[in-house]
Amino acid sequence: MVLVLNGWAASVHAWDLCHFARRPGVEIFSYLDQLDGAAERALVREEGGAVIVGWSMGGAMALKLFIRHPEKIRALVLLAATARMMEEKSEAWSGMSERRLKAFEMGLKLTRGEGFFGVDEKLPNPYMADTDENLGRGLDFLRQTDVRRELLALKSDFPVRIFQSEHDGIVRPENAAFLKRVFPQAIVDMVAGSEHALPILIPGKIDAAVEAFMANTTL
Image (cartoon, rainbow, N blue to C red; front, side):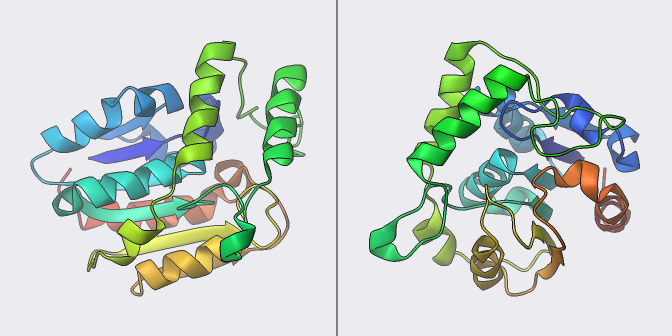
């Protein structure tokens, strides 16, 4: 089984360019699915474990699932993933400021995601409008999630692939260095540019990583 954990307010179309997402045994979970526990329940039910693909907020949730159910993880593919979204000057942690996060929220509402990250208009729009209440739940998750200490206390030996844009202003590139400390076995691919919507920017690389893990995983 492959569980795909989507980004905050992202539509399923974010994965339209990824071939692996159309294969049997692959399930895509929205951010609301994640907040409601659907992805975690699916992971717990899977007797053979799962490959987890997590993008942005979904990457943070993938890290939480690893902390809660490490025995269920067969492999991880982390795309612009972070253990802590918000900046903390007292700990010299690079992240989003509250002001930038609020601008992110307003921009998403005003534009309905169209061109919000500079995605070509011919490509799928990865974002969708949602209710203020649901968007607020997602924002609370982004603001509150901090799993740095829990991650550093764990060890793992399953394969991990990390993709991170070099100048991403939403999830800072320093996150990839932190995740490499957590998963020393990981292969890290730093992607040129500042794009956050990695499933649209580098679908071929994601396909190769996921399909390699799927080939060695019982689906």
